[in-house]
Length: 328
Image (tube, rainbow, N blue to C red; front, side, top):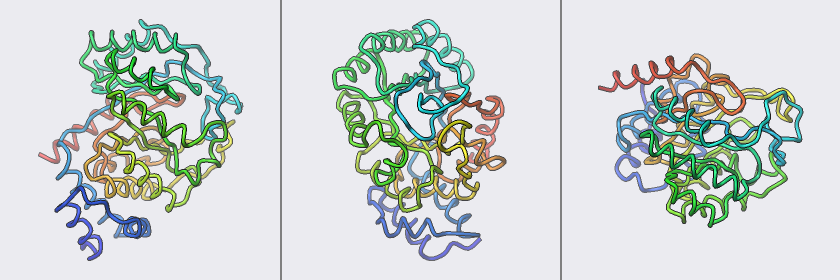
């Protein structure tokens, strides 16, 4: 399959110097690829990944440690109190329940484990519970402990870091120009402030978004460049899985090729950053899930998500094993 000259030149430039940021004009040009050119884009994204990141695929798992009744009005979220969904709601789980789930996911093959909570932010008492669970997870497993706990103060970030938390995840969700269409109860600036507090504490800041909320390709590029400016350590990419009862329940899904093109776009803008494929991949990619690695991803979330079922973990581990054997 021939690679068009623009794509070949852009790829070679990145391979020569992956610290050089491609222009927004070039990034937008990639979004206009169609047909066979998309296959060339995926092949080049894989080459960039192979040259800049370790060979292995890492795996993340999460626990919905506090569910529902969230005051925020994020248009996609089943846990928002502004929507009418049939999810389970419950307060923050205790330390033992969180630790037991972490141990089960470590046994299943996860390398990262994130405690995720609903709501704008946690109270200081709830942060105490998360810190205790983090310490126990570090003592009993080899997992890298992560948190996704909403907005953070610098003092809370320091406490989490001291307890043993390595990564703090807080998605920007979408481009700043599109964010008011998705959420009105907190600001984009507050999201960025939380990421900076996490990074200042010594934790790695992990942030990405959801593709397919109704944003344009230009806004996907905008999000990718914002994450570049923030210097995030890892980028989780989700795809919208419309939940009945949310404001986006009737949003049409992306095509598998557009989803893969979005992954490749982020790889071209972030040649050396981990990219994890998370929620919505089963719904959006269907039979093309194994193509995420060709498109530039080097990590995948396994197990269930917050309010939706994930794919069978044995199938995901087999998919990873097959891909890694192909590369040897």
